[in-house]
Length: 126
Length: 162
Image (cartoon, rainbow over all chains, first blue to last red; front, side):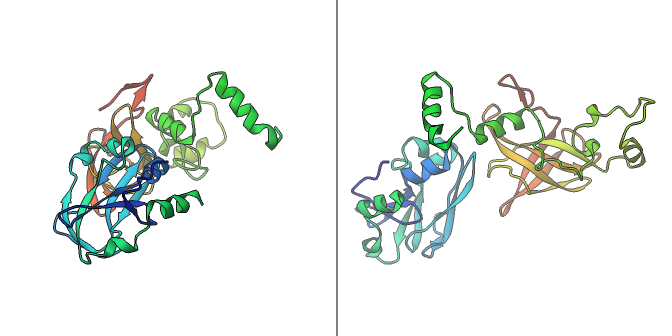
């Protein structure tokens, strides 16, 4: 299972990457895409939407199941990766390249309390 | 088979070139073929005339058979029809409500068809909703357009409808 060391993780299976401009890029983990199977539909939040921690803001749907994606941190949607909506399989191919949305965090230190790669690996090994 | 030997048998089958195919794959195939899943699209409370199985019942024959009188006495008020999702916006799934020109119905099975590259479903609709009608399906917080078709959707890996 691919769990890059330079990313942060949420126990709801999103990954996060701090960008130089202060935004945070978010996607679903390799473990999450593997569990869902072949994705056939992705819905992304509207740019400008303000999200609370844990708020359902995107949908990933596979042949087997529909699943919500949650905002792991609070913030405002700064950008969305529109091309994935017409190529949902790109998330299966590389879950860390096919990001879903970018947040301008409410609290700049929000990532500090997220799981690191080792902690996330431990979580999915359980 | 003793549970302890299951893994060895599985490994031997895999080594012999047997391809694993799970419930998901089987469900996709039977839905593309327009076949009912018992307990999902039909059960003992659903008339064969409302389950897409009228072709299995010969009401014209003079022969009497168990259930014939009941079928003749109650013409079908419902039909099992195929749906193909027209809009992007999700996947058709069981229990989603369908709004038609003749009233509401419900999806009994739905999935994403790899052959059609669209979402397909079987739905119990009011009798009289014709093939070709565009109906609307409640998918989460949206209403999406779907077209009524006569199953099957595909045969031998080729789409029969689009």
